Length: 384
Image (cartoon, rainbow, N blue to C red):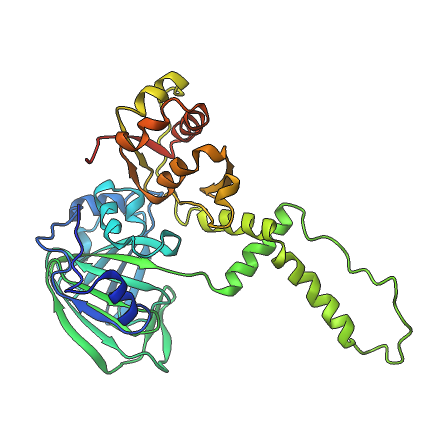
């Protein structure tokens, strides 16, 4: 288990002073840090079809990027290249533990855990991200330069690499194992590896309005909603046929606003949209379906762990109706088991002492059986 030390700041003090405001280096944010995954294990993952990975390097002075899966790395030499793996939390239980110390930020904001292996001189180039990121230095050393937020010119150094023009650094620091650098959106930055190293980035992202609107439109289309036509039975004769009157404009706008103001409709969209998997899940189905009797007994003796990368949320304004959302689907349940469902959404691992009281509740037993049979939760060793 990783314990985050914010250098004498409480999580709320950190949010007040730095979150989305300014970058900061947190020395020894993780004391006695050990890489949760080895370079060889990471290289092996990047050879898998379902894992998103890329190599970044220079060839004859020009930036290059290739996307996995990869077959080998020997041809790259011993310096000036980086391997990046996305959504490491989906494929490594050990690495996923790095996310836990950051749960003072709501999980719906989480993007993923990214890992980087780099040889001396390796980098992905100077760039600007549109998300908040905590970059945790693992083994080795890396130098980070961070510029101030402002007007910066971006350009395509490669069709897969958007870089930024040279910037003046407000942070120029070498990070050693256990050090963390936090960078908000919009701040240009560049990391250059000083010695063969690993780093792990916990990224948080909020959707742009255009993505939400696009997702909402898709949701309406998929569910055959929002097809009502504008009605105007009290239409009056107009003098200017080319004009869209103020009243007509307001009616058109009200069509859209009415959909957004439909709380039940928009809550269902939001829950499904926010819990849809961002990356492929590493689902392993049980060999045989669980029985209700088995689940009842297991609730008193085993911890239940959520699949890495699985998104399970509840909305504050609908949870009391017995509704939550798991992996892009709405799940309805008896209001009697709301406290247990909250545990499943709030915690990656739920211990037997937290579940024993529900071992005779048929509603909860049925829910857990479904979740286990789908591979969304699985049995794990107790962490208590």
